[in-house]
Length: 292
Image 1 (cartoon, rainbow, N blue to C red):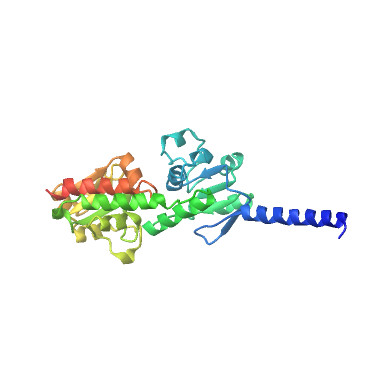
Image 2 (image 1 turned 45 degrees about the vertical axis):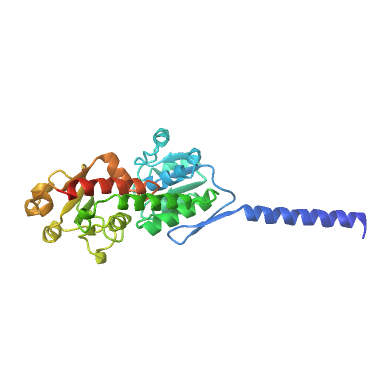
């Protein structure tokens, strides 16, 4: 075997090792559309267009990788200083492109997914609706960001929710509850992460499972169900008592209505790392109003 041949062989071998290492460095994550997104390395420039995804990135200790967020991402406070790129439903495409992100995190229902992809940007579309969805998304973001043991977030959430449930007095269990998520009568169904938190707290959701995670509820449905307790945000509570037939609902007659501040509502409606805090907010509401 000649020296030159050996040198050539070593060169080829070294190239193969380099190619294998480069391939091993690829990051592949399959999003909620079933689309596999491949990146040469863990992204360093990220635009997030969904508050729950923004919060999860930061909880994983990677807030510094965010270069832009949607107008609703406001936690932690540091993200408020970042450039805003519209909303999840109406993203500002030009602003996002100008930020030169390695990847864009957004909801599957966003109108901008295909447009951004057509411009050559990598898009990871995820939209958690249930607790299992939230846990899965946390794991996927951990893979994307090369953060080991991302599921530690979920373990902390699970322990926090259990503690909130244990804090409730027996007398409030089995209360029948209506949770209005947003204007237009959109409610938290049993299959949503909010409905699942309610179940773990021991209360009963008046919205039946077949209606889905976040159904639009006819006001008459709530009148017929006659809930013991209503949960609603300040953004939606205006005019609630004037809805046809609602003045006779037990919850309104007995003043068992929890009106959440905008800050509390942000915590409650985001399937992210603050879900244990959401459970504590609901537990406090149930205790204060349910024991009357």
